[in-house]
Image (cartoon, rainbow, N blue to C red; front, side, top):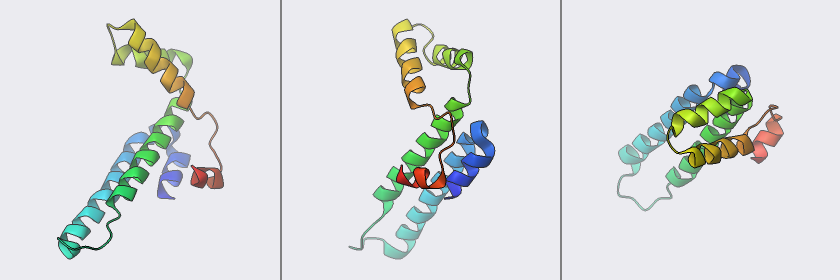
Length: 112
């Protein structure tokens, strides 16, 4: 829920705050597990949290890419792979497919 609020208010500048928040939550959970449940046989939610972290960061990048123009996306792909034109086209196509132009509702976000 916090990730959705960050992305709604910051849009294209939401990537780094989302990364810091999600990684911070993951770090706090790992420290908690190490301190209170080290070497125990209790269920650990780290894997589920890691998947949620990846999905939240992916969502933030998709929304940020959706705010960019065609020229900015082409420049972005060119900066990542300067010498390999085939790779530039693949990166551009991948980013273009995953763009989110219009912010989804909260319930659509939860279904993601």
